[in-house]
Image 1 (cartoon, one colour):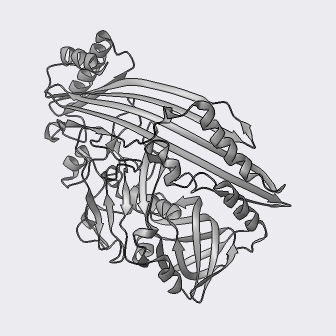
Image 2: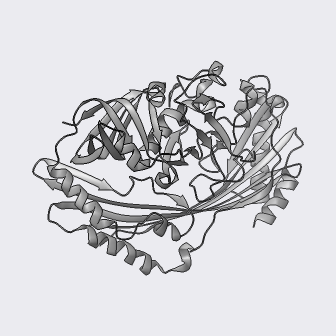
Image 3: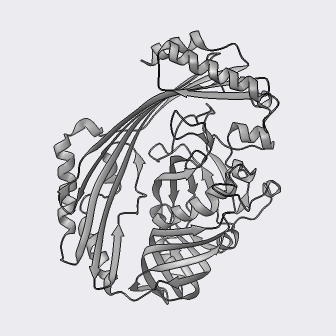
Length: 477
């Protein structure tokens, strides 16, 4: 089908300065067992193309699910008309944007394909985990689920560019909710962060099987645990909380279109300004953040972004100093700075915009034991449960499912409802210790929203465990 689509596109592409076609086919299946009851399986297929045309300083695009030659021609004509109409009327002079002409392929690493076992066998995996959670009458809700996505994209340019990418995503989830009187507590397996590219081997990589009893035991333990104490103290954050911290207080404020003001009426602006790049101290010397598409198992790895720009690993923050924004080819040309290949669209019917992809905190040299031993009074927090951050991505307040006191260098009592707040740059400048590779985890999120109309997209984050000092901690009510 891709060959036929390419032939049709070559015939209908208008004579313009630039023309591209982006084909997307996405197949999704979700299986779930809740309270030992198999839920209805869901499947979805979405397929279509977006054609983009640049004519002079103008740019236009049009999407269609009609992949016939007539359907493509209508979309190409409409995109061409918009390009002519917008010439001289846009913020961006598209004649000055060096639109990519990609050549290459990308494929997710898959060792055990989703189809290698039957539907019944996959449901049996979920049945077994669900049954293992219901160990006590105080467990009032529990769930085990798997979502699998197959995504194929084709990017073509009228002058010969061609990139084919095939992705396989697995999104596992498991949770246990306990109740006693007026108290309800939930423990989940990494929140919804244990998502990766790959096949069913991902379940072994994240230790999915046999996790139910631990989640149930921890949910029950939280029922009788005291509230997290309040005050300024040290905080150790596990990777499944670090990904939220990176996402909200580094990723979003560094999206270049947001810095340029494009999102201010919807998703907010940023405290970061253009003059900060190259000199601003974002964090301590231990803070090293990379945009890294080279970890092929990570959730948002790819070979080319949705504008066709080749993806390459880049430092965003190095030794605490802000180096470059998260901006694709259009934002780079508009701002006159170097960015990364992160123009991304949620599907064929949306235009690419600046989005996080794999944004990772590089490992340090400390062991978990060394970090705990360095704390006189503090909290070890795991698994994000709530988040709030202001419109400029500066002041934040986050909460976790699980907390444990650290007293005189040792983990002691479990506490519930641990929360902390801060200001982005101040918080990252108080980064005291960064965990070594043994504490490092590859995670992500399947549902980051941005853009008008809204686009929900997959984002990858990887991080070690980290220690922060002088953090404002507070407990729940």
